[in-house]
Image 1: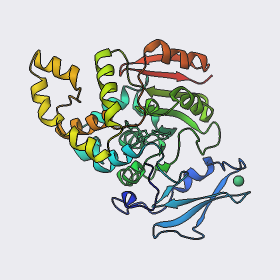
Image 2: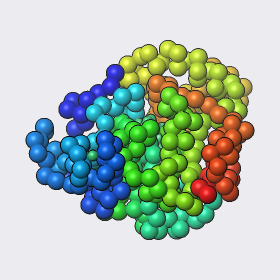
Image 3: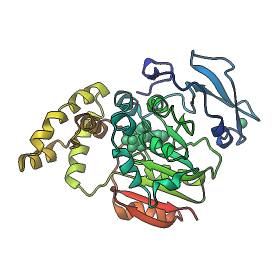
Image 4: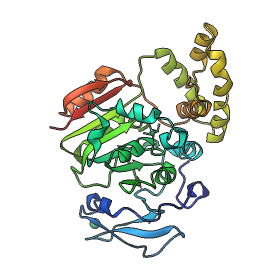
Length: 331
Ligand SMILES: C[S@@+](CC[C@H](N)C(=O)[O-])C[C@H]1O[C@@H](n2cnc3c(N)ncnc32)[C@H](O)[C@@H]1O
Ligand SMILES: [Zn+2]
């Protein structure tokens, strides 16, 4: 069930961000008439944290900015499981909170150049979740815009509050509110396979890339056929359950991990009911919930994703380590 902004799930983790970053405004485009937007004081505030509006400079189009986050959608549509997930696991994978570099190492694997080259680039993080990768891009000096359809934006904005070069937007990757050719780099890690039309969503990102800019994506791999068959079978049930029930069931991953490390028993257990096997129990719980709760979940192989890139006219296409990951350059 989609949730609207006024409900309690949207309560901020903290109020540390109160206004949109002015530097993001020049790349925002009115989706009614195609002209630019401007920031203004909220004309008719609907709640205490609604302090600004983004108004079209030419027509009556306007979107609220609530807690510093422009809201280009009115609900979280089909991603309510992610609103639930990132509200509960707001810092589980956040390097700065955990005092480790796991997300930074994973982020580096999504590029065929060092992260230091992100400095001063305009970057779009599509499906930013709670902002773990945007944090790394910001740390490396990029202007990074994180967009997500879910109320993960509440925690992402808080997680990124200390970075004046980061801006979070609540919006739909399939209807981006930017002028064409706004970004040097677009990345979308673990997101497009959760949309109803992943290839269409991928192709829809390309107009927003500058000529010569790079796009990097990661999708779920279909090569572990037992895992795919088993999770798909379970998901026929779990995607019909309330998020709280799937969350409860996912707690089994905490003790099962130890059982699944026993040879033979583990092999059979993982085939019957796959769980995330991360050594950190909180991460394990998060990723097990992440596997069984999203409404849409698709799996891919290399020839198919390579074809997306080739047929979109991308150049310098490279396959990267995390399956299935590709990067390409716009001609
Ligand atoms: C598995 S999470 C990945 C989050 C982040 N990229 C990471 O790896 O930590 C997938 C995210 O994609 C977002 N998402 C799914 N469909 C979307 C859409 N159409 N537009 C924007 N975000 C979307 C979900 O809300 C969710 O936060
Ligand atoms: Zn307009």
